[in-house]
Length: 149
Image 1 (cartoon, rainbow, N blue to C red):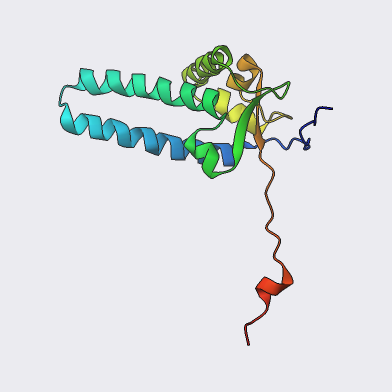
Image 2 (image 1 turned 90 degrees about the vertical axis):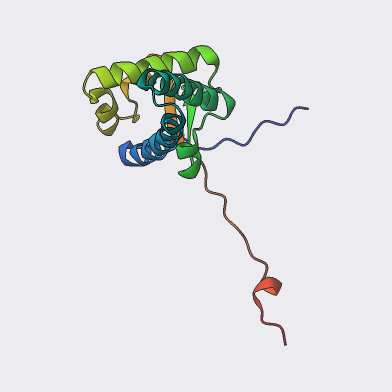
């Protein structure tokens, strides 16, 4: 008999926690671009490499773990609306949605604050949610808490 994974109620990640994760990710990507700019003084090289690194960063982390480093730090994760993991096609649609959200003067991201499922335009395009991960609680045994004599 197959064991079913333990199910948890989904708690959607809201605007502010997602903004925090985004800031962490942008600082990480910005650091990579600054390092490239230090070694290559031609703007064409660092802009092009920055774009390539950004696409690889977002798509790679979404497909690999469903989390970028910013999302890992804040314990949130991207999943499909059917709770399946994100695949390459979905990740590409989600990245396209990021572009749409930026072109619309960030309205696609601000929409997260007003949507009942906390989905931005990029989430709706890719059919994804960003959810909070369950917090693991540590249980201490009484013997660990008592003072040695």
